[in-house]
Figure 1 (tube, rainbow, N blue to C red):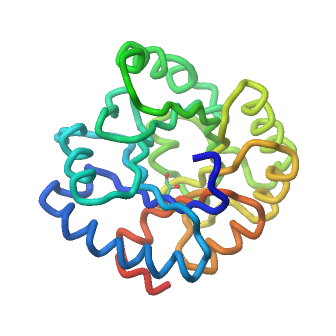
Figure 2 (tube, helix red, strand yellow; figure 1 turned 90 degrees about the vertical axis):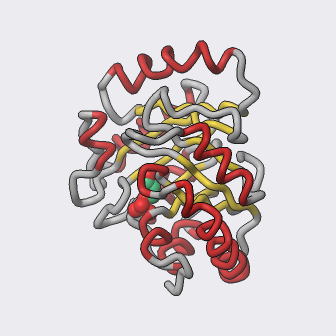
Length: 236
Ligand code: 1GP
């Protein structure tokens, strides 16, 4: 994950996609990927799989079905310690460092540890910063934490820098799924300049131009969920 220059991750929430729909989705998304690769000179694509809640979904089976239908690497982007599967390739081991809720700073991580001890997944420690995206998002609701305001550049940079000092290998700036405003390019630029670990940016990115400007500001990976969910052919 850390090595490619420009990566794009397509976020899928298994709660929103029936297992039976996976083959058709995987086929349709491969065309989208082909188009985006050309338009944005992307080196590597990933599926991010996860969600804030995961009721009535057999996560392991779901991931396996996706793996059977696609050769794009699958990265778990977990909403809780329940979202683990050996059928994936990697796991973002998230620390919600923008918040002060110990459940998402240490408790979930401890609960996942017993399984991870025996796991072959590539585990990637990731500092996760929730940034104000203009509306209350699921991450905010579930984690019971407040996002960092976009105007407070010092606070955002200091949180990201602390995440780096703590040994995280990636920093993820998250405006929240369906955000009304994505993380500003000024923030992306400043954080990129001050850190030496790669930056992931997601939340509220809806067009090819949105994505391009985030790469141009220095992000290595962009995450897109809602826009592809709503328009799989990605005409944006
Ligand atoms: C959410 O950053 C991701 O965790 C994707 O957000 O659904 O707004 O693209 P969107």
